[in-house]
Length: 185
Ligand code: FNR
Figure 1 (tube, helix red, strand yellow):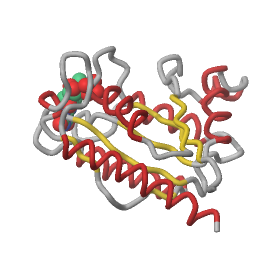
Figure 2: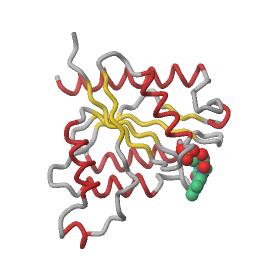
Figure 3: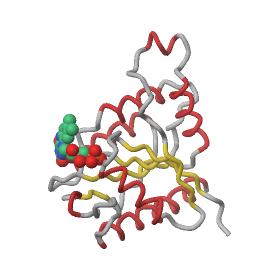
């Protein structure tokens, strides 16, 4: 029996009907046995300000850092905004990156994203990978899960209905589990 794997999910959209949140919820259903997903709440994280940090990190930032510290891996599920990461996600990463414990360092990571457009967040994903280099995290290279025309891939209740995307998300989480075990060895 393999060790359990704890994954922290960071969703880059705060909107209620977010396609990316729906994709993250699909991941919850498709995860392999032994994997647990915890969802970070990025909604209460204030804009990064070193003056605020100097007074002590705000509670939502402390919570995020504690969640990161106990996670074996991070799953980023994010839209692309203006060819890059949404500010909400980048801001949360920026706060956590100032934690002296360096919670992203050496951490396994996986990325996926959904967009109504044709490229399925490709440009966001490569910007996020660049940031992960600086953080010294270990993002999984493949599979790349870029959910294009995502507005056609979920039903009215938010359930993922697309077979190919289902297989891709399942494959990503299985590869992430293997990656975590590989990095631990
Ligand atoms: C977008 N959108 C978008 N889509 C894309 O494929 N590439 C992009 O660069 C952008 N840029 C962009 C900027 C801003 C500010 C917004 C609000 C939107 C469209 C985006 O993919 C779409 O709104 C998604 O549905 C957002 O993800 P959620 O909220 O559904 O998860």
